[in-house]
Amino acid sequence: MNNSTVKKLIPLLVLATSCAATAAESEISDSDRIAQYREMISDGNPADFDEMRGEELWKSVAGPKQATLEKCDLGKGAGVVKGVYTELPRYFKDTGKVQDLESRLVTCMTTLQGIPEEVITAKPFATDKKASDISSLATYVVGQSKGIKMAVSTKHPQSKEAYEIGKRIFNYRAGPYDFACSTCHATSNVRIRMQDLPNLNVKKDAQTAYASWPAYRVSQGLTRSFQWRLNDCFRQQRFPEPKFASEATVALTMFLAVSANGGEYAGPGLKR
Amino acid sequence: MGNPMKIRAAVKDGVTEVKILMQHEMETGLRKEADGTLVPAWFITEVKAQYQGRTVLETQFGQSVSKNPYLLFRFKGGVAGEKITVSWLDNKGDTRSDEVSIAG
Image (cartoon, rainbow over the protein chains, first blue to last red):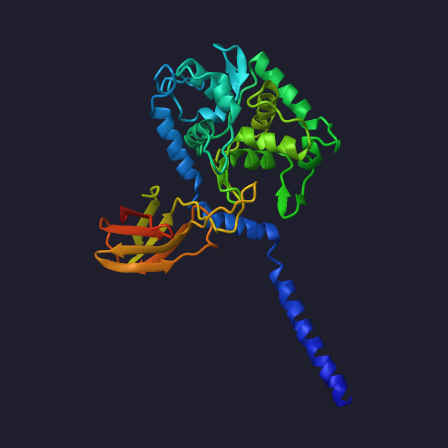
């Protein structure tokens, strides 16, 4: 072997050792790393601030009627917030409708505080310029269900109907991309970019996914409600934008909530 | 005055662990509005933690720190029930100071 061959070999060897090191490191999968990252930051979830803001709003007088929301009936009687989220959506006698948390909050804000529905639903999602009252209120309410098992009932015929409609929406392919929710969320062990996609037809996946919303999105610096989550799913599918707290979104929520029944609610969550 | 921090402190085996969640926009000064105008820089520059008049942590923050930053640190000593004070200063001269009792 002459000298110049040796020289050529040295960089190759260096390359080989660095390749080996990379292989060893990648034994920790990307999703493990994301899980690690989530655990590291879960201790300091900025959604806590939104929860505090929501609690403040819940107890403050507002609207033309100058009332608080402390008499709002979210399903377990006037003013009860503990555990209500685990039973929503549900059928409400007074409105004669199946309602999710956010649509029910709209009802309370209109009936108790006298705020017109259009005012509440005009800009229901937070931006980096302006916080959303309804979203903060929802964050506060869900926080009071932490650690309680999901138990959404489909006993009432309208609840059952909402569930069936939701299931159809979940599987309904349409739009310019011919997409359905199920296109991404009905197969196990697939991912989009770095994110593992939950298979929402599998109980465990559905439970984990549903239990983690609403959530603080680190990349957006905002706490996002469940209505926002659905709205963004439809946007990604290039569907027409759904109306806030509409029957269709409530039905889809019903389907997803029932799929998560039995799972422990863990929100508000924290997302990358 | 800035928005309140959320601070938790607990002592275990003679070491106090302090967890701080700050509320701050942490604008880098590099981001632009939709119309092209620059969003001015606005971020925390200094964080300080004091225990019994002694500085137990002094740190400088910059533009690369995220919005609503979270900081965890430990120091030797600390007695349950005693107070720890955390304060920050931002590049606009705004400050915020909060205190919490150390849990046992």
